[in-house]
Image (cartoon, rainbow, N blue to C red; front, top):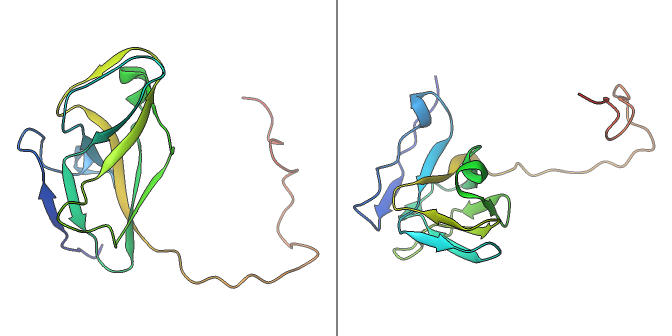
Amino acid sequence: MKHTEKIQIKYFSDKIERLRYIDGKSDWIDLRAAEDVVLKAGEYKLIPLGIAMKLPKGYEAHVVPRSSTFKNFGVIQTNHYGVIDESYCGDNDQWFVPVMAMRDTEIHVNDRICQFRIMEHQPVIEFEETDQLDGTDRGGFGSTGKA
């Protein structure tokens, strides 16, 4: 059974749906645009997501595009993978997603444009140098062939 954490969340807009798990089954939670955005191809924008959170100590949020974000809106997340750490938890620390439009597009309030999950911080790691690894050699990067 998974451990439950209570997380304080502040909504900056009453026009977006409240957060919930995707289909009630996934570990990912959709994030929605908190304002209407019109972009021309090549334009960049920080899109407000209408929320701020106080994450538990030792945790961070990972924000990524949804699988349909590019198809539906023609935008890419410019940092490709956003990390929000536990220190970004003030009353005005609204979450944003940085996007670049690859075509002219419109994003409306409440459109699902990205998703997140909350993860524990990486454990402390100590690197041990070696001249040889004892795992099975798969042939190097890109060696598994074509589809």
